Image (cartoon, rainbow over all chains, first blue to last red; front, side, top):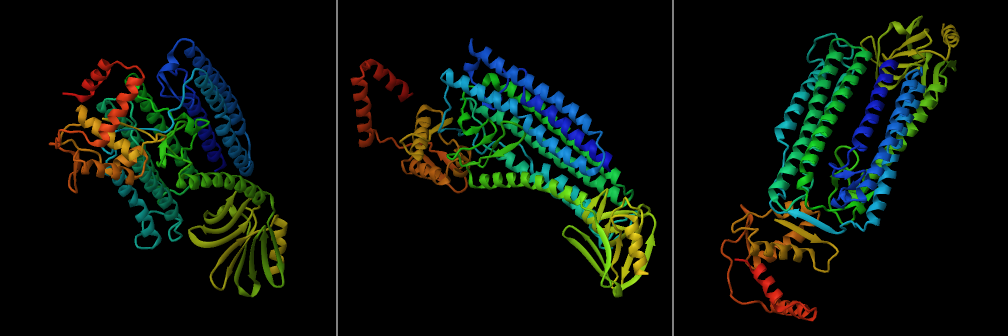
Length: 468
Length: 121
């Protein structure tokens, strides 16, 4: 499992690095509508200015190449780290650094380009709104069937898994049947498909851009852009559906965590491939229409560092991203502010989660008998099993002989805590360090099964002796 | 036809929309019976309040430039009533423009040429 995780993180990092380098830092800026977060203007091509723009773009590209190379070297070194905690901590930290560090040349380049604009007397067209009456509300590329059909197909594994859990149907060798674990996992991925459908509709309804006085040019340009976005979203949804089917097969027939994580690796690869296809066509569309662009609404003043859109006069919530794929929110919009706060909250939550994982991994579990009760304790969790409620006690030498699937709780190399399905029996409570082979299986009179162990085999053995 | 709105202008946005649609009809950019976007679509496109667009359309309808109905939305009128005279507001606006041009030294021929250009066929 740790191996698959390591390769998933490596793949994510590698693709983020490559995306940054090839999309955010183009070598050739002449056919780009947005250069380092600044809207391209025809004045940029004038003698004396073009050379300055070229120098800024080249410098940013050079810095990005250095960051990419260093990033790959560090990522390769991180592949050597062993232990789930260290891996999780360093990979997450590194991914943050890659994302933020990868933006530094962009921000510096953006600032330099804005200075050039100021020096040559170019101003943002603040407060100017353009709309093409013949295009307004008329250009859409997303067909409802394009998002409804894959989501209907994706419902099949969810329903099958639910029926399996409810005991209505029986097939395969599902070890999770009855635990609802498979239904929760498959259902979660299915819900992602629904969210992607909503995202597709939002993208399709985004404001049309006015690039020409000719309405046909505007209509064709916006239709091409929206078609590309629709293809990206529909591609995402189908990839998601394929993964829900493969998850269902893994749960129903050949359960293995390695298989699920391997599938995740393929899933990520397909998603990145979908993004790269989108970027390829987006670049082609922009290059195709750059010569026909006569009207430029320069709203650079509303883009903080060329990345965050803040325009109190704009009632739109969604606008096309300048750095990256898809849409971003107007941070001056009330909903945009909430989304921004949630985004910061999620970042903080990730940092706190990493700290919590570190606590979980480094705090040893303890097992003792006190006042005729077995007490399992770690951090804020405590399982108390009164001795007089025990129906049977069994001592085992190797916990790894059992197949344990986490339903809720913590599942790490050094800690299994919470509700698990053990050998197909769901609802078992685990509180053990799987690296210690020895464990005690306790079944209570109420039918609950506990698998517990101490910080060491000696501790487990002494508790077993006390129970006897 | 492209509508250009200046949010920082002293002229209210609904008035700017109304003026540009009138100019579009006069220049032939908007043809008789041509469909206009719905209030909601135009408001969404420009990122402005639907009430603002609705007010502009209402004004255009009252002045007889467009017609609206539930089924077809807003369309340019095929027959715009020709009163054959200028309103007093337009007359005083024209007087202001001609006066400013005169004070700025714009030749009368230039003004007449512009009127010819804007008046159309």
